[in-house]
Length: 164
Image (cartoon, rainbow, N blue to C red; front, side):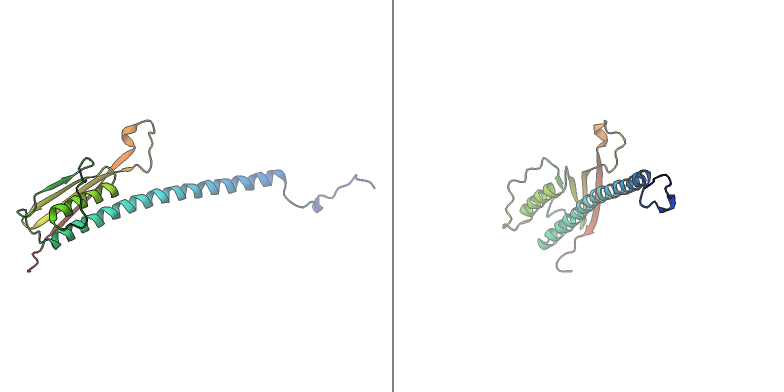
């Protein structure tokens, strides 16, 4: 048998270069998918935290309405931050002061580094919530002051008297 003549038309399969190009294209696609997954998870966390803030604001309004709180004479303005002592919360006790204390404990559990102000004015309540979240894209990794951003939820509602 003589191997002098090889018919190039009968060669089949991939060459090494074709295989390397295919692997490169596949790897770029996989890196893109990993980035999308990571971004989606961060945005999901942000969305969850905002939802928690809205639910907690609604919860406070429901607690106030259940106790007949309709003006500033019933409850004074209220401030919550990460240093607020919530150790006296009694979940089974039903009065407005205890409810505010338990609500503050819920805030501290749900919102990182939360700062909440509740203001009463002529039958209206304003709930101003601020909390910190990690920055989604940080272009300056060496600057520690840029690794968090402040989120805000401002909720205003009229507290109706139970008789109306």
